[in-house]
Length: 181
Length: 336
Image: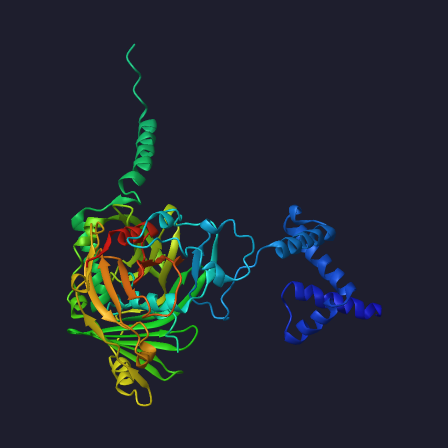
């Protein structure tokens, strides 16, 4: 890379870090960034910017890299919970895990919905298993459940004839998932 | 020696200081309203919601998920017209003309047509006096929301059976601009708010009537709700849960999308405290697909699903603390 190219790349990365580039320049900037030298320049410019804003933000690359590595390894150790499948944020249900705190592997959300199974004795229902569940459980697992959504829709039907601008009225009903077809 | 009189300058400063200290207390942001004042506010909210013409974007958020809809409401005499269009996910529109509610999914060419119970319609234009028995209204000052000045009102429950709600009410029209349901420690469980709103727009009922008139090519489903009584179905709540009274009871199918399959009907009883409501669903074992007992929460809505004996499944759902649902479960009795 000639000195001329180098200074041009630097100018480009500087403009990119300030958010002052058009699409074509942005693409070239990203290309330059994929080179190790470009990344170093990129980091340098950000460090300069950070130091100008606050002395506390000035830290070495190694510090950031170590932090990232630690974060990645921690994330890898985290239990995986089920997440909604679709890209559109939709209603999901949280099942409290207070009673299932001892459950080691959270491999499948489905198996977790069974945590209360067998808790209710025959005849008149005992309150014990339910009242032992704190309403605000610290941990919970997220599921999508078509059956629960059907009940939710029926529950919210009640406000359907109310104008939208009333507590608990029609607008809440619309975001509920549609019928299962 | 007699005490020296306070110099006039100091005296005026002292008064100023006293006034500054007392100000927030006297005109304080948290003033409990009298029953008459509360009633006036709630009536104003209801009147504006029913009688004004308004349109805007309403954003609903719960558990970190957002859903927005474009809404329009028109009122002409005793007629009301409403259009709610979901802006996220599969296209869905809800049109309402008085008590007729049309839910339309254009992509699936499905229209579900329901007539609301006249029982509910009779509550129109009246604020339920029961609200005052279970909540007190607190004036929390004035804030700006959706570009408008709003009065903040907190509906604080008088017992632990229900959640608090915070309402932002347009000071000029009385229209509710935002409502938050608050859990323990004032944590927001869910929120619905206008991100933009136009009030007193021109009424355009055709935007509601036109689409519901032309539903050719749509599969039109009219779910049946058969009105009944809990006792007639062999059920009893003893003792009743404080503050919740039975406001409707019917047999219905929850699978309106495919009624033809002939699912066994579900018994739904709705209990209301004037602001929020709890649904009790009772299904016969075998009438529904196999299921598991569970307790779940979404936004402010709690659910309890449990078997009762070997014959019944009970599902309780409501925007209330889980303990309230437990009370319903404990009070439910099967009469032979």
